[in-house]
Length: 412
Image (cartoon, rainbow, N blue to C red):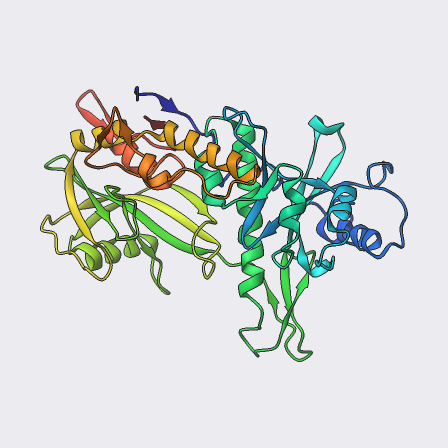
């Protein structure tokens, strides 16, 4: 694959186009106001259709099933996929006769924006968990839509397409919020049941003497590329759960009472025995495709400069860790066929939407060029690890001074 550059306006899952502003409570598209309108429609007390009444916002609903958003395929693998947004009327039609009871506690408010591409006007976006609706799979199948793993959509996305990136960010936010609701059912202070509040943007304890407000939490994760400046090398690691031949950065969770820099140094030493001195912030990325027990992760990326070089791998954490030269890392970045992975994932989505459950094996197709297997490769541009590694591998020297490539551009 030829070397090209992908310039991303924001990391994958960031840059959500419907979360740019927080509306005032009195606005018709705020969580509270739009939820009141939605309740009237759900109860049947209002016969007005949102698309006919200019005083009301339009509604779009994105169904999720077991953490998977509804998606469709146009059959054009260049355009790849699109989210399965339903307007409120279509959504009610789809649910008719299904086993899903349209409860207000299944819906969560995602945000709003002025949708110029859909006749203008403010559009309020919602997500709904229909995991109990097994028959809906068949219903959506008639519309060439299906529930797709967010990771598959992440790889299938055209990362240079701002619109597609925005849709992926919305889906990531929705999944994180729905998973948080699923795992946060009881008050951590008194143990009583929690209920939805403010259109699902927070929860409230039901105990009168407590009434604690609970907001979605974010689990901060430090991810670092450890650099041996003297010998021009970078430390990469691999885990048993990785795709074969894939190497990546070290990472770990922040502990209470610990700064980000301290977490970088501690995690590096615990996992590899390497001591770190200078720690430089690079960028961050929301990561809603982690385990359901930690659905709202924030990856915080650093470049960390080693003060010792001898590796002592903690085998309970890592399978292996090695120093790699800049040329080895550049080769890994060039060798990885990310475009092929995109097309393979897009084909898989298309086949699933046609009713074919088993698509191609992504692991076997990934990173193959002219039939030759690359000795190593790194995660694709959808991951912050890729941009940490790429920024170091393609750093430049200006007047004898080495400058680190900042931001989230990626050279392939």
